Length: 132
Length: 211
Image (cartoon, rainbow over all chains, first blue to last red; front, side, top):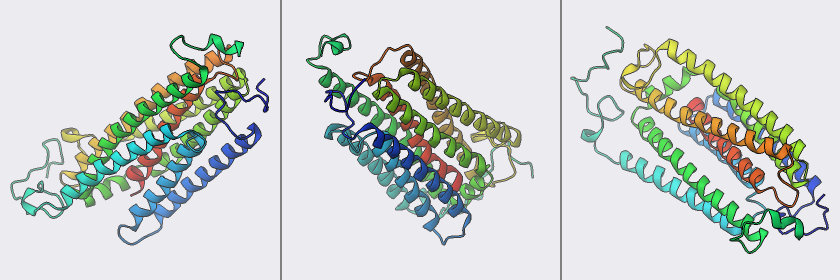
């Protein structure tokens, strides 16, 4: 059908087809390896926030592989990349600003039972919770 | 290119421009999907910050192996969808149908494991908000964790169902020869949607199950 020499205008794959298959296979294997390693690393005891950071770093690496190679951002033109990166900027704003808001509040404004909140003696667990 | 004229909508100058426009439109839609899930992730971040102990305990009570196997299943389904698109770029509609069908089977396995997990939570009373009736986690953190758990995984599961429907329709049409090597934009956009479903799960898995 579409021979390689046929410079079809809708053909977004610059590379010859066979290399695309091997690229998909390589990305798939790396994704499997990263999934196994994030699962294994979660069982290893790591100090403090390192656990979260390692898990998120692996997730970002996997997400980047999917976006770049399965979703073809690697070989597509600028506009699509710009849209996706813009959405990531807003992800950072939404999560970052919301979390920094909560992280900088004074104890009185924290909900009862939460970390760093003042003790709330009148807090009662939900009615359907345990009876004692 | 006389073969292309049948695919070209009258308001586009060329098939190339039509393809770019369709692709850009899909990416804009995917950006809104990313932000939809980000709102839930931000909520998760806030409550995890407020109730770190409860979240850690509740997360530890989850069946991590189900989340792990589901991640492998979904990543593999993304791979088969990518291979299905590759078949479409060569004009092999039947190959696309086969690989998209395989992806749908993997998605069914994903949902089956999810159902096993949900059943377990229902029996254990690990339900959102005031329906929470488990002894496992003390204080207000437990009910909040499971509210977010069901919201995030539930919304994702809805996306899996939609994605399966999209793959089924496009795969069936591809098998009937509706697309060609010169024109397979619907196959490409359907694949993009499925990869996004995979992409979101890649972040759900560590956040809910691992950390």
